[in-house]
View 1 (cartoon, rainbow, N blue to C red):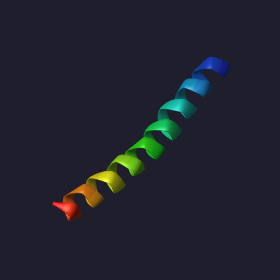
View 2: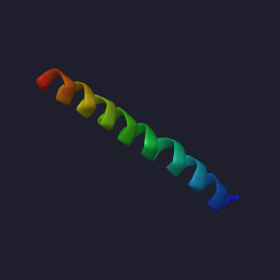
View 3: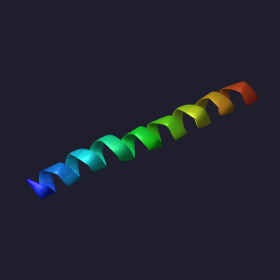
Length: 33
């Protein structure tokens, strides 16, 4: 259960932060172009 929980948390939290950063970067890059 502990490992499953960590995997779920990692899967949700890491992609969220990376997703937001990627979205912000994409928006800024598109604005530059």
